[in-house]
Amino acid sequence: MFENLSDRLERSFKLLKGQGKITEINVAETLKDVRRAMLDADVNFKIAKTFTDNVKEKALGQNVLSAVKPGQMMVKLVHDELAELMGSEATDINIKGSPAVLLVAGLQGSGKTTFSGKLARLLKQKRGKNPLLVAGDVYRPAAIEQLKVLGEQIDTPVYTEEGNKNPVAIAKAAIKHARQAGHDMVIVDTAGRLAVDEEMMNEIASIKKAINPDEILFVVDSMTGQDAVNTAKEFNDRLDFDGVVLTKLDGDTRGGAALSIRTVVDKPIKFVGTGEKLDALDVFHPNRMADRILGMGDVVSLVEKAQEQFDEVEAKKLQKKLARNQFNFNDFLKQINQVKKMGNLKDLAGMIPGMGKAIKDVDIDDDAFKHVEAIIFSMTPAEREDPSLLSGTRRKRIANGSGTTVQEVNRLLKQFTETRKMMKMVAQGKRIGNPQQGFRN
Image (cartoon, rainbow, N blue to C red; front, side):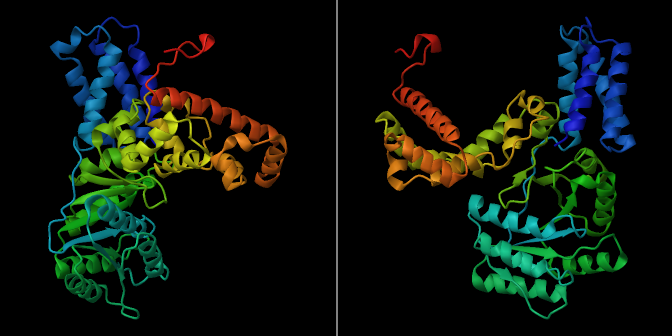
């Protein structure tokens, strides 16, 4: 996410390293490079110029001239301006209707249907809503079936009318059904086209007029750069939508859409999609995104993801088991599953300050745990409960059953034993001393 832009900005800031103070000359040189970096990221030229002009004006202010470390000051100024460019603060959606009606629009292939499923899951699990998904895309053959599959995965009903090709009638009937069935949220997925056309615009405008939605979200593929921004403008001129959803932010995106779209359409980015899984949807926080672009990590989002998977009851049980040295491979599997539920491993590591650059060229597979899981699944229930049972012959059997080697099994057992010792020390409130001196109180 934004790797190329992050690298270019870092190189730009290096121009100020070793400088005693910020001057008009060295600021101009640095910001010229920053502007090039933004243009390479497919940011609108006028926006890039206004951005660097604003930073320059602030950088040459009286308070900044006395800065001891001008490079750090420039990073802060660019960070604040980036956050401002993307909207400053997170903006919530309007879900106060009875039922609240949300209309999802966008081009074909932008990820509207998947987003609809993700949003229904988020509203259901995090806000206690009872959503109804509406299959309003009557043209793409697989759209209705795709929404049904997503609905089953999140245990959310999907309203469809087989054979009906009138999306306006379907949407109106769905809202009536939602009131009768006690749904407090209706999410209408609409048809897209490969390009903006009059027929498409007339249809989506007719749906809006008929159902008067409380919220209209425009879904856009962030990998399309300035094309996404131009499309958003055309949709906004006709629909006057309430917010933007950027999908595929985990792909090879240069960042132009995220940095330009707010200024062009004057509407906030409300959500970002960061993967295909249904939990890969995040509320958009401009400040946090600016942190990540500048390589500062995003600890707040990392903690929030961890808290989502945190089970207080299970944590207390685990603490007791650790204190009694009863932590076993079943517990280990639970911890692995919690980490996996938090999302893409490389993205998670990138949220740690300083880690983004360190792991840029490292290939972290989402199945990084598969060998460990294979080894544990090849153990008998008794062996998982009591690792001391794992003799040489048992380890050989486990290696054969998991498609690994005895050495890999031994390595896992050694790591598990050392981890259990350390976790027991922490659970008992003891302090870990110098490794060469062993553990001490």
